[in-house]
Image (cartoon, rainbow, N blue to C red; front, top):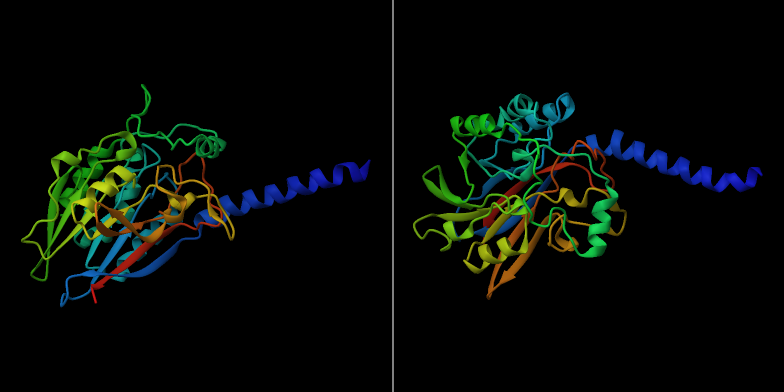
Amino acid sequence: MRARYAVPLGISAVGAAGLAYAVGFEARSFRLRRISVPVLPKGMRDLRVLQVSDIHMVSGQHKKRRWLQSLAGLRPDFVVNTGDNLSDPEGVPEVLDALGPLMEFPGVYVFGSNDYYGPRPRNPARYLLEKVQGRHGLNGNPPVVGAVHNPWEPMRDAFDAAGWVGLSNTRGRLKLDGREIAFTGLDDPHIKRDRYERVAGGPEADADFSVAVVHAPYLRTLDAFTADGYPLVLAGHTHGGQICIPFYGALITNCDLDTDRVKGLSTHRAEGNTAYLHVSAGCGTNRYTPARFACPPEATLLTLTARA
């Protein structure tokens, strides 16, 4: 009788230990990824870009808040926030406190679906099922009727007051040491708020460098940016797969991007053009699935260098 129950109990113990690790340790084990991208025009001085994404702030996440504040010590040339700052309608003051030191630097931002709408309890196994069925999270559909409205407007107003440039289906610029950096951004494709026709036309010829920014890296947006000639696209949304298999990688991306490019630097090709794509794994989780496994939370310091 004892042998009959030994294996199931052992499996249960391993599963419980893995869950405790994923929730209690790895989801709070914040990392900084550093990469170089040879994308600037020849002769242009390097640019240090801090990308933060998918904070999914919930009230009381003190360690995350302190870690985000500490990133100001990197002294980037500018900050790019690729959205999903919230996972709690009460989280706006804590997001602004966490990002306060970073708002002393020039920055740009886009929003994601969780900035606009509060999360709902959901079975995590559905993500895996959707992968098997060829579906992708919300699959580009608007939130259901009755979705909780997040108070994103005060967050937007605070970003704007700090001088950060909002890029929801629009263009913007930052002036850095006499150089003009142009940005083209989209609202979140995950809930069909993207309107590429409003920003189509490619990089602005009078800018020193141009960057494309979007929350969710759906292929339609990557194709459009790349075909238009943008050299660099920055995105978030995927959480790096969030629950990954060691030595294998991510099972899902929560969009139609392939899992090989779920996080980090890669390239994208469309209509004869090639762009660098950086997808941040983000530093948070949905409040109802607060686990990460083989995919620690992160921000990224990108050093943009001149092309050879």
